[in-house]
Length: 272
Length: 314
Image (tube, rainbow over all chains, first blue to last red; front, side, top):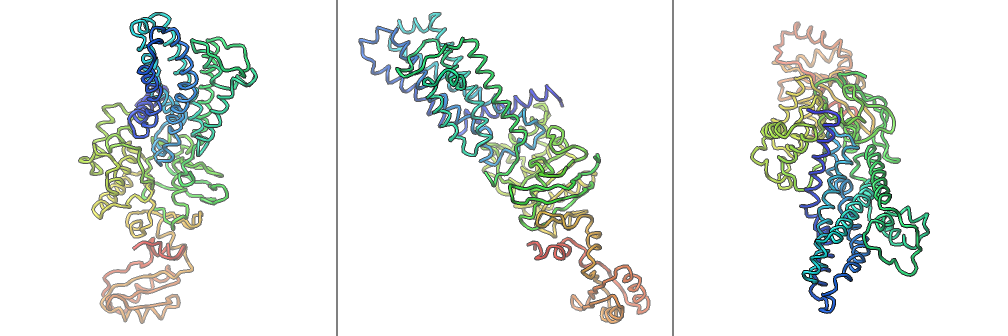
């Protein structure tokens, strides 16, 4: 039997695969699939009912998708999907009274937290990444060959890549946040809603407070700038590389905090 | 820290202001140890503490020299069958064990081989690929035991392990526990069925109101209870003769003919003087003695004396 890093790597793999299976194929994942299907359904309805006059102008679609991505996909779908997936990594098992099986294995609690997080991250990226790709394809589909040509052009693929990177980093940051919430709170949806409020308010906050939100950095990675409305306070945009570093640092920091909390985790199901 | 014992040193656990266990000190030797006490006495809390599922508010615990806050080392040594009748959603018996062994670091091939071996050991081979949610209570108990023993631990901690098992299952599991104990391993069993604890345990820890009220072999614990006269059952051909002669002794406080005059139950306040005196009576009267056995040197009696109400067992 292996020890040290090789063992930890193996344990992380085992834990991640288990979480991927649970997040993708259990009954509980139905809510995530319903959420993920909403933008696809929206794009499908748009494709069906788009007036003929707009079908020949794919340029407008780029802005339209950018707004749907930011205000609906990122702020609502990715946020709540991440909440549903990551909160249950610990809290779900506490409520099912099955977490002790993991704590009875020779696994460092930090390894447990990382393994579960990676599993949740891969599952959320698989679901939400597919949603982003399908939604963008359905947005350009009504424009016929012109739309498809844009989609497979360098700029179209660049946009798609940027949206996927934004989605992955959103899953990473929100995921770490909700894993932590699941460890700290008996009802993590209350802090989740409060944090959503903070994220929604971000455009209207002064610059020094914007840096405390996740969506501020995610917005900097979106390929198409969008208007935040007339009351938004303008701030110096964050360079892309800095946004990536900041989001990775936020994710890592929150995960480290989660691992620390997991170290002191006790099994007291009756009080949960 | 001893490498061969389980050490509990002045351990207290509070859930907020609620007492779990209070200043528990015990040194558990290899063999089968029964943990007995009424519901809510702190048995499960103590077991959780031993297995690192709870952290002590005060004090220190170590298992074979390993502090209980080091899961990576501790759970190579310890297998714990909890009282919780819950399992990961959607798991089959096979997957449940395979996953556990994979976390222990076994390769896929070794984990698969061990899984089948353990499933066979607990009699669940046929049900291996079925979902645990569809198992009977007894089968769920068996799969929990399988999870506790699958990595061949040196210390087995079992919280009410015989619950839900049929008589055959109980006998099989008791054999398994005894086999582990014979190998020089630690087996700690909590049960509210005292006669079962009596049947299998080399020693007991009695816990009441969060505190240990007695610890050691049944005989030693019984010997410490001087306030209660020792009961001795003498089976012989003329019990009334033994009763009459024994009653003349100062330290014999009761002599009662029992079991349709096939024996006499004697109660003495001085066990060390009693047995030589009994030998003299037998020699002097020529009574044919079948057996002389302590009648209350068992967990049930000791429990009654120390805690009261019989513990709810049959």
